[in-house]
Each structure stands twice: as structure tokens, then as C-alpha cells.
Length: 453
Image (cartoon, rainbow, N blue to C red):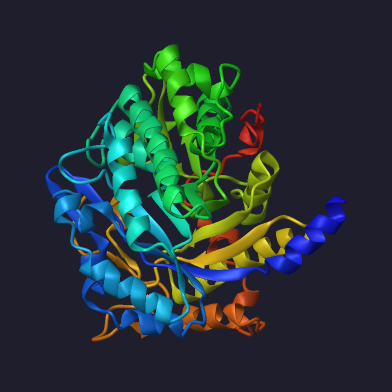
């Protein structure tokens, strides 16, 4: 029975190419950093014609709360989204609508506002009522990453630097996702949740396995909350209580966050995997940090681990085995040369195809940052103009196709890419990737618990 089902599944859902526009609108202090203004897409409707020429049929696309209704729904301005979504529909491209992308909402709210979930749900309902034909939604992109950057590390508003702010932000986001999908489905019962998250792994020295184990368990937390897995026997229950959430509050929050994704979206970057080392003298001062118990350097694992980092195939397989829900790679991007960008995207594509051949339900690989992105080298904490190109390069009068565009077009139309550069291993497989003293990370692989239900 299972083999017949999987056979039908593969026939019904051939691996697709999706795409996305970097659309982060994050708040730092009183300032909003808007990628759509930075990349010019806010004023260029013709970009959609260029996207259509890639032969994509689905795109992650913003209908952002902060931009549409910064002063309340009663004062919402839908003109930009009306025009763009209408044109996408005419071009035959289905949007996966995002409502909050690393943001915290308009100025009258924040991730730790108790009313944040209901406020976002009201906006979500308004979006669904205005665009009842939209079928796929991502109410909040990467809730765990956003909660960490906004509540634990202090990078983004509300600039928390403690466990409790992080925990409240994450629980609020997951509740907002569940309430938003409930509101959307009251308008469109068939609406699907495409929930994204970065699932980078953490490696460490033997001394710090306790910390890497915690972080590797925590990386699943947003999905586990949405899937209803977090109960008193879950490894993260005690951690959330340690953060300062009472058992009664946590029980109520877990009841309100249950909303299993229809598609789990994995955003994976080579810099997502980290390595923790107490030998701080081996690393630059800007990498130094700690957890209150031990001081350590936090660096890119690819630059130090002798065995390399988790390959896309393994990461996706882990996710499939944990949840058995449809998957998609919802962001693929590398800040590097055109050659390396091509190799990275093709490696992820081949991993997805291999998994699909093994009867894993994986739907798509997404060409992220079609127009590139700005200032992610500083985690968008300042605006200095650091630009990373994507499928198009903006360093010309009009967006110009890069070599990745042809690769995307070939894959989207079922043509086998034929480029000699693809035969050379990417820099992440070559010896020059190692810039710090090489350390074995083998003992910290798998330093996390299995799913418990």
C-alpha cells in the first residue's frame, strides 16, 4: 500500500522550481529596513515579466503587514499588492503569500505583544478576503530565527537579550501563525500553510556538546510547536520553563499553536551550520561569546570541521524522518561567485531529486533572492549598501540575468543543465574552506533527541 501511494505521490508532484524575492522588512530601533525599496522592486512592476521568463509557476511573494497597513487596517493601502498579485495571476504564477518576513509588525505592536497573534490574524483575514484565489501562505517567515535575532541576540526589535523574551516571541509567533491560518481558512478552507525555517546544525568541541545538543534540539522547536509535539515529555518543555514560561502558560500556548504545516519549507545556507569552541584564542574577537557558564567562539562550521558540514540531502532526510510531511527547499542562495552559486544550487537540486527518487514527498527547490539582497552580512542591522546578487544582478540600469537564470530555466522546463562548471566541487568541499585550526566534529553529530510524540 505504501509503495503504491508513494508512486502516485511522485507522479502527482514532480519536483518544481519555485522562486522568491528577498522582502525582509525588519525593524532596528525606530528604523525599518526595507529590502523591496533597496532592490527597487517596490517601483518596478516589469520585474514580474522577467520572473515569468524563468518558466517558474510559483513564487514566494510579499503582502507585508508593515507595508500594507502600518497605521491599521482601516487605513490600509492595497494598491501595490492589488497590482502585483493581479499581474502574477495573469502570468500564470501562483504566489505563496508572506505576511511578516523577519519583521515584528507595525509600530503599535511587537513580537512580545500579547495581542500580536490576534492582530496578525485580523490582517491575514483581510488578505484572504481581498485575494480569495490565493491558496498558499507563509504568515511568518522563519519564526525561530526571528525570535532568536529579536528576543535573544538583540539584533532586531524589540531587541531582547534574554531567554524569556525569546520564548515569548517564539510562542507568540507560532500562535499568530495558527490564528492566521484559522482566519484564512474561514475564507478559503483549502488554503495551505507553507511554513519556513532555517535548520542549521551546531557542532562543538567535546566540552560544549551540552550546548550544541541544546541548540540542535531547539532548531526544531517552531515545527514541533506547530505540529503539536511539545508536551511535558518533550525535551524542549523543560527548556521553555527554564526560560521563564510557567507550566500553565506553556500548556495554554501549546494548545493555541497547533497548526501542522501542509508543506515544511527548509531555508538552508552554508553559513547556517555553526561550530562552538572554548579555545577562543584560535578565533577573532568578534566571534567570542558564551552562555553564562562557558565562554566560546561561535564560527561557521564549514570553516573548521574536518568532516565538513551537513549536506542538503542529510538535512532534508532528517526533516522527512521527523515529520513525514511534504517538504520544499524554500531558500537556496550563496553569497559568492557566479560559479559557486551555480554549484550550490545544483547540489541542492540533486539532493532533492535523490530524495524524491527514494519516495520522499519533496515538492520544490526555490531560487531565493531573485533580485539579490542587501546588508545580510551584518544581519540587516545597518544600511551600508552591501549587495549580494541573485538570479538577477541590479548593478546595471535594469535587472540583468546572471548565469543562474539559465540554470533555473533549464531545471524549470525539464532540461538537463550542461555546464562544465557544475563538474567542479564547490569551495565548501575543497581544502581552502578551512580557515581556522581543523577540528573533528564527529562526536557532536547527532547530539540531539529524536522526536517524541
